[in-house]
Every structure is written in structure tokens, then in C-alpha cells.
Length: 424
Ligand code: PGA
Ligand code: ZN
Image (cartoon, rainbow, N blue to C red; front, side):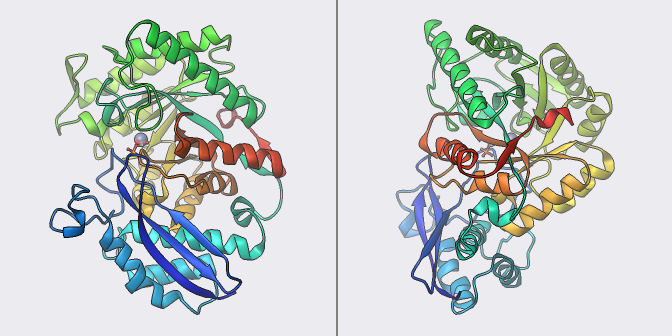
């Protein structure tokens, strides 16, 4: 079935910032739309997000953040090459690569390429009359991913109420996604109640829907989340464990890791030591970006001494980039990768980075961004790609719940399984 129209336009994300939408129309009269997410703690090595900057007139009220250039690239540089062609994700991505051969998509903007690529994926699934998850895995049981869910937010997402970005929980003992989500909601509500009783909450809903509660140390914050889990009546370790997103690039100044609320600075070597103590003293099963995006030696030495069960997850370090992943595989810098489509810029290349990681024995966690939209394609990608895990933020905010609700829908309507990825 042929493409009849490709249209880019500007919409808003969950933080009220402009982002790119793309709509692909087909001969049968159907239209398939996607909207791209955007980060706040953006890694230096991510694909280029094209924003207009301060010069643009149309940008006056958006503080330099409008995306008219990226939208114009869809409408004038991409659309003419796709209209009249058969809809097919792989050929659309191939064409996008030809039009912008730079690895970071700096010419068209990764927001323009990803919006088009996602709309092409959704349209391709429509033509086959299957869900987007099924488009990627046509037969066999689908694997609903284990959620990793934000309870406390800090860092760039909650005005630095906490030095690190997130304290999350992983309901590894749940037998289904439906059960997992019910546990998470209970823990988040308990944490909100305990936090407001103590008069501590400053951000009831941070950028990713988590709670912003100031704590003087990471240890006190972890203890608080553990207390919330126990008060709900769930067992720490066997049913729910902790995960951290340190987002360490945010507080690394090139020489030291500065935990400002704690009032302490650590050299790279000292911070490796500190991180090791932290993961040994708490039931933490996953730690994301424990070190800065280019501090490879800290990653490498931590990976050598960390407990074997620990998931060492690269986000800013790896930026869903095949070359950086290769380096991490050969140097054993990490053992798992966060997969964010907009760090990469194309659906098929994002999927191939995920497959490359899985082939090397890495765990894969498909992730949303702090700036999200009402779209739910992320849930289908994580499921159809058999990622095993997903990270979306918390259970507040329609842009977060759109993804959780889609996973509930997949579990209810498709032939699915749900597994604890930490048992492998
Ligand atoms: P970001 O944060 O979307 O603001 O980059 C998410 C993360 O660090 O995982
Ligand atoms: Zn992260």
C-alpha cells in the first residue's frame, strides 16, 4: 500500500516543551501519527535534537525550544522522497539514512527522523493488520517487560531535591504485569503518604511522575523507599528490589563527583568505592549511570568488583549507539543498556543496537524520557523486541500511564508471558 502524504508539525510534550509529530497517510485513507520524546539529562553522545534556538521569530514564546526547523525538514526534505512509495519501515529508514548519513542525524534532526520512522512503523503494522508489538514479533508468546518504576525523583527532574536522579523499584516477584503494576501503585501511594505526614514533599509530581522529597543522603532516601515497601506488606528482595539511576554526569565536574546535598566530593576512584558500598548495603539490583558518560575507567573498575547479580546499566555512557556499546562490550564496562529511540534517531537502528546488546549477553531496558507524550508505542517496541525490561517513570501523569495502560492491554489481548529478567 502506497504512502499518500507525510506531514510534520509541532506539538507539546509533558513538560510543556515543543516536540515533533509526524503523520503518514496511506492509500486506504488511514493516517498514522507519532510524537517524539525528549530528555532533560541528555547525554553528550546522543543523536542531535534539532531546536530552533533564540534567533527564530516563531520561537519567541518557547525560549529557544521550538522545533520548526525539524518540522520543515519532514515536510520539505523527507516527504517528497516517501510519497508514492510502498509503506515499509525498513525502506523508510533506509531512505532517511540516505538523506542524512551522519551518525547523529545532525542534518535533518533526530527528532525529524525518529518521528517519521515511528510513524512508518505504526503504518507498516496497520498494513499487516497486527499490533505494533506483533509487527516486530509475528509468532510465539510476546514477552511483557518487567517494569522499573520511579518512586523518588531528584537531580534534573525535581530541582535536585536529591543528588541522584531516581530511586526506583522493580517488582521481580510479581507473576504478571497486572500484579506488578498494582504493587507499584501501592508503594508509591504509601511513599506519598509517609512523605506528606513528615511534611517533606516538595514536588508531588516531578517530571517523570515520581515524588520529590528532599533527603540529605542517598542512603536515607533508600531507607525511606524500603520502609514504604514494607508498610505495604511486600517482601524486600523476593518480591520487590531497589534500582537507582545515579545520572552521575550531572554532578561530575571533570575531576570530582559532587554530592551537594551531602556536602561531599569524591574523586573518580573514591566514587567507585562509595558506589560499591551503596549497592552492598541495600537490596539494589540495578544501578544506572553510576559514573559520568566519559569516565570509562571508573565504569571498568566498578564492573570488575561489583557483585555478579548487579545490573550495571549504561544510559548516558552508551546513548543507544552501536560504537559505544561495542566499546563497553569489549572493555566489560557495563552489563546492560538503556535503549532510548531518540538517542539513536531511527526505529530499525535502535532495534539493531538492542539486538547487538542481547547477542553480547547484556540485559536491555527500553526507556521513556523525562519529556514524554501521550503516545504508547514504547510499550509495543519493548514487548515486540523482547527487551525484558521497561522504564517509563512513575505511575502518575497520563503520558506515563499511556505506556503502562498499553502493557495492561497487551497482557489482556495478546498471547503473552511475563518473566523475572534477574533470574537469568
Ligand atoms: P532524561 O532522563 O529523559 O531526562 O534524559 C531519563 C533517564 O536518565 O533515564
Ligand atoms: Zn538515565
